[in-house]
Image 1 (cartoon, one colour):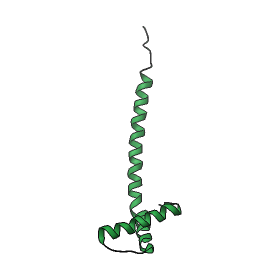
Image 2 (image 1 turned 180 degrees about the vertical axis):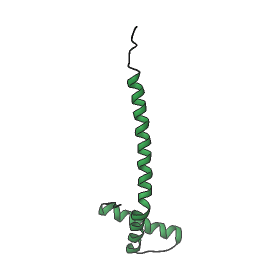
Image 3 (image 1 turned 60 degrees about the vertical axis):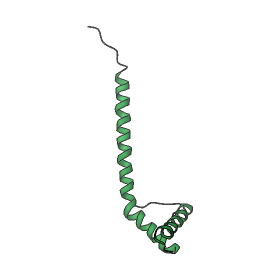
Length: 81
């Protein structure tokens, strides 16, 4: 899965990765190394988050569909025999 990021967003993420390593691991990493971490996350981890989000959206759409269906059915008028 290929995720296209704007140059600005990619640079922000790289800076965030460098900050994380600095704060959490007390380790300074280069912009290149942070870029490699970002590539790993995009290629290996992001698809899992993406698929989970797709399933969440699917559940929401299904709930809305069933709710809409109930509302439509409530408009039916009884038929006298």
